[in-house]
Amino acid sequence: MAVVGESAAGGQPDRSALNAADRLRAGEPPFGVYVHWPFCAQKCPYCDFNSHVRFGGLDGRTGWDEARFLSAYLRELQHFRQLTGPRRAGSVFFGGGTPSLMQGSTVAAILDEIARLWELDQDAEITLEANPGSVEAGRFRDYRAAGVNRVSLGVQSLVAADLRALGRIHTVDEAKAALKIATGTFERTSFDLIYARSGQDLAAWRSELAEALAFGPSHLSLYQLTIEPGTMFEKLHAAGQLVVPDEDTATDMFEATQEMTDAAGLPAYEVSNHARPGEESRHNLIYWRYGEYAGVGPGAHGRIITDGGRLATVIERHPETWAGLVEAGGHGITELEPISREVAADEMLLMGLRLREGLDLHRLAEVGGVRAGGETLARLVGEGVLESVDDGRLRAVGPGRFLINELVRQISASFVKAGNVAESIT
Ligand SMILES: C[S@@+](CC[C@H](N)C(=O)[O-])C[C@H]1O[C@@H](n2cnc3c(N)ncnc32)[C@H](O)[C@@H]1O
Ligand code: SF4
Image (tube, rainbow, N blue to C red; front, side, top):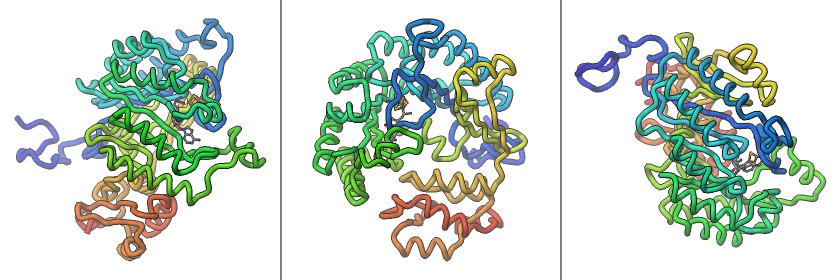
């Protein structure tokens, strides 16, 4: 049976049968919904995510009015449904902040509304970020009952003293217990570690990573510690009170990470993300493959496609200010900007080069209307920082994996208008 937009031969879609937004979406990963929960039990000294600590407050224990926030999420989701029109969602991601501070009923109500507003795939990936310190089996079961099928645990370190140095409020034992409960509750469990920490050497990281791999995870996020502007760590670092491994040691740690995760069957599919084949985060792949997603909640960003083209959305960061905006006007969007094809090309390049599969040049031509200059590509390939693969993809390799911003600058400067898509990938 032929459906609208599909060629009779069942191959490439017949784009002439599609409206403007559907034409833009052809070849994209499935649409996703990101929900930002902005509260944390404590602010970690290295973190610059939009996270806020609340004491006391209307419902006493948690320090925020959960019913008020739930209503605001539901209204903002409805607003996004008006912007996107009908879509089929393949993933939902509750990020934070600490979404594991949410009540199970809040998560359930948000998921029900998402399923009511958009068509939610039967096998949609529904992820929730959880902190081991705010974990209890009862709440995990509630999340599971609400529809969450993947959890991403912020373990950060398996060394007690280092957890304290990171300002974490959970212990190593709590992290291990949370991992066990999560693995027994959800179809898929991932966890995060931060390396290149103060006082950590290569041997220490190798042994910690070996311990992590011995848990048999199917997905791991392994982040090199970044000293973020505006954080407590930045102040300590600037004052010489926080010393992190030098660049060579950090590079050695990165290489050891690749070698050990490859050997364990969890190769990197993105700079910091490792998975058994097929276990990649489908939601995060939307960002890296430059797909379409609605982002709701304080500080969330989104990229949506309308008949008017691609739009970038940014939401008010402050939680209560956001809730007030939603109550007054149905949404907390503070920026709603059309994305030009030039900007889309740069964004797609920046995201795509993070992926092991690389950047799809065919889509770059479709979305951004550009192709990369042959001379620049040949030079970067010659320098061993870029690989141009037969399937029409560009991939950062060798030292290029640490130089993605520089690669983006040089490749972007070489962009020329694509005559047609076939030309752009030759
Ligand atoms: C949005 S955070 C929060 C998840 C959760 N609240 C937690 O802390 O476990 C997602 C991940 O980013 C990583 N992260 C945050 N700040 C970082 C930094 N400055 N350097 C490296 N990784 C960082 C941590 O591994 C963290 O688990
Ligand atoms: S718990 Fe997570 S989101 Fe909250 S401050 Fe710590 S790292 Fe940031």
